[in-house]
Image (cartoon, rainbow, N blue to C red):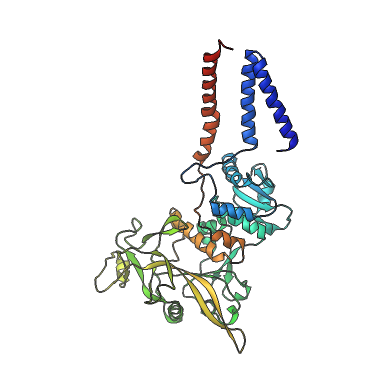
Length: 472
């Protein structure tokens, strides 16, 4: 508050006090409500925030607040959408800007500002764009299409650093284009990740730390060579240091060189590959007859339930349990189906002494240690994160009604793109839950300020008037 504003407020309060004690009843009544209006305006102009909710739904986590304090310089937040969408966005952003007067908010109506939507370059007509003021380069902007605490903090980190986070998807002659996985693309876009397809004969386009999504399937010789380069680190991928997300499948048994290469690679990571798919007796998607097991896991304090169609069978080698982190398991009543004819007949049943009892890992994370020749005389060990997802079908559009599938997929890719030397990596390491504000959260302060508090003040005023009207 400036000195001029302080003098003006002090003079007004003095005038109210003198008028209240010296004026007539009508003037007192008028000035009383005028003072209430002034107090309300002060509360709106210089608000004091305190979140009393048990789940802290209306505030960022302590870790998030610490991260925001590290951000230097002015930012501008563009809330894009129609009226209700903009209100939700503005309410969310105000939780950050209340302690940062150099951060501004602007509302954008897509119907009135088509120029902004065109410059945005997105088909979405709602979301949040964060811009570093004073930076004209496009990389100093970041978009968020799903308002959660981590998504917004990641976007701020990307805008401040001026980096574009991307992930490559290796393609061959018969590999399905990722454009067909529209909901998976939307989940990545909502997390601020750009996905680009990479032809198997152009591994040289890989950035030094670019992560790669590998949908492991039988292709031609060119695809096999690219897969060997990514997994074993030879020839054209010799300088690549990015993380790898490996998508397997249990419904298409591998053979030949592809099977040998996969078993050789997984064996080096302490994992056994079984050429079967995992079936589930009790907890599976309704109508799937056990071919789409359900599983749940805790990720950053949030429980995620996902469906895994025909997952591949993996087992951790004895003595390697500490090296491989299993993020999600199948249930105790799952098994590896060794007779594929049962799948064709539509009758799956566990056969004792024939099928392999579970549980089995469905999502794994480990670290790849690859020895590489830097010159003729020395070697170095390259460490990269490896994520193994045992199904390559769980993010198909037909599973769009299972939110956990796409939530988990985007979270895995987000962790894969995070780099240790970036602000975004600091956000990824925060032990905080996502913050999601629903519409009814915004109605509570409205009813308190418009109905409850004024009614209470009027009742108190009427009581005071009835009690002291003869004295006054």
